[in-house]
Length: 460
Image 1: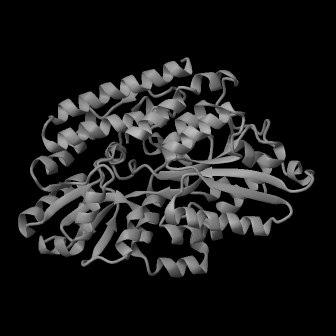
Image 2 (image 1 turned 135 degrees about the horizontal axis):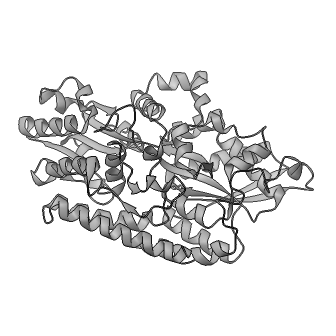
Image 3 (image 1 turned 90 degrees about the vertical axis):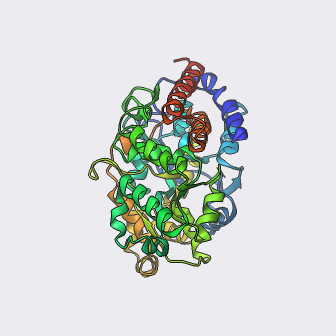
């Protein structure tokens, strides 16, 4: 975590000089077709158009991504060639990308993590997805892609990047332990109150722990979104005014966080640890009743656990028609400094990667959710879904998430530093060494400072 903070600090320190070299618009053209090239730019190019992609997909995810890149290169042999390179975890990737802007060696496409959205928008070194789609109507059909995912990468009304891989937070339950605790209807866990009650029942009636989650501010942010409260003010930084602070020291979000903390201070919860590994180990061993974790956990559980499990929607504490979780994952940002032929070639790659068949292949290999709505129409996908109830639950949750500023999540270049500081405070609250009020107040103060420092670097 400290390494992540350092690398993002290096990146944000360069924002002001980079942003000063560009016009005061969102992205390169604020969504109009403007400088976005059309198909003729690639058609008129001579020889092979070489493009580069930097990403932070490691292990099995990277293997699946590289396989798709290889397929694209085969299909476009003699016309387009893609060189894709893993650049480390998202924070390292972002630092390397920032350095490449200074040396004029930026990749054609960078697959940046979700919370890099604020930074990527602020440096104004990308062509917006909206403008490329307008200039190339025969390629990526943005309306075919998941609306909640597109919502995350839309800033000031302009879709900036194309989502590639989407994850969603879920409530994972050990149905065997719940049954022993007398809970046979899991629909009662659809709210934060229901989840807390179930966790307490498991601890009281089975002798096992009731709850766990990773010590990650991502899940605290979800408690705000599912309470119908923007995590950042004003309006999660989505309505034309930059975020200036966070809101969780008051309102419905504070109430939800307080209920969760009570599970730790009462001894019902297992501390999941910074990466969540301790919680996952306890859950997979059958020693925890319910756990908040991402959809990607399915790969671990499919390897085999000694109990029945189920993936449930992230619990809410607000009106179900207006609230929902914030999606995670990463998106493809197309370089403004690439040649026009490279830009169109990059857009062709993004078209391929987001196609129904590519998303089916990538999803089944990684556990990420297909972002193309038409993937579900494929006969092979229907057959796969029939055998995977958890994947059906992921898709249903994403589909049912309302599109608004609350579920879009906070967009700020300071998000990495905000998350790091928040984790330290929440761990203190979980351990009982700080009251909830004290921890949330400290989180609010540190977030305000982090955002102010970032905005000062921007010259705002």
